Length: 316
Image (cartoon, rainbow, N blue to C red; front, side, top):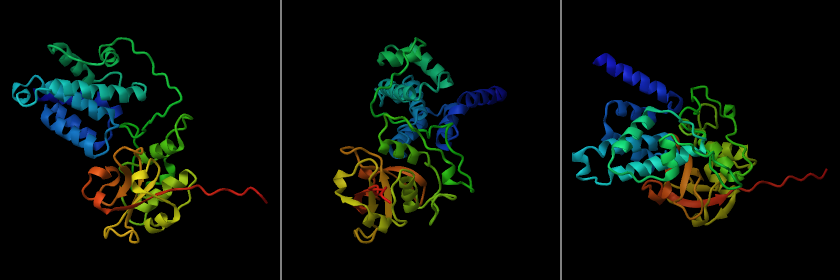
């Protein structure tokens, strides 16, 4: 029996190995082999809501399968009657994300399990194209028109190995699709560094500090800003915080004074959405934070600014 269990874990890991490599996702894999579905749902929700994993299709898939499993558990459904509905919602999110990545995960133990679970359910409500994908019917290839499409290349399996001799310039530009805005390209590039450690005074060799990160990312897209968070605030165009949008910088102060800036991040949300930034956190390195819901950062937010490219004078 023990050998059979080890063989299952090996096969499961083999099937998913091209999509893993992220330690937080690997934890979900282990929990799945242990049949700890309740903990998978809790951890997946936390990753999606608080840890910047909303664009990670595999986390949504783990959540979908775990909820489908729990929909068969009478003790769980007594207090969670909508478990199956939440499962199909999570699967539809997974499907849309995977579709943007041109269906990277065509075969999977998770998809096999989900297929069996949905077939055995009394009734399942799911979008037709997602249903066709799951049950093997032909799925029309995605047609990309000239519109804004975000392609994040930090998915498991595509992540950069961050070692002690990490060099920022070794990371290639993320995408060159002409239909992306310049801000989209910059944010996609910024997200490639998720997980890089925080090192005080570092600007890419081994890691970053907060202003070293913003200076490096903006510099790759033609913006020249000073080295420190305080001087970056003074160098760029001042805007109202409520006007901040993707590509802008937001500034924080522990003392809540505009002339005592202690942190800076890059806005990755659109105007009108919850203000969200990517930044170099001293505790977790490069990460994504929803400022609106964060009780630590929101009270310290004091200013916002918009980088401006300096005009090049071609005259001799």
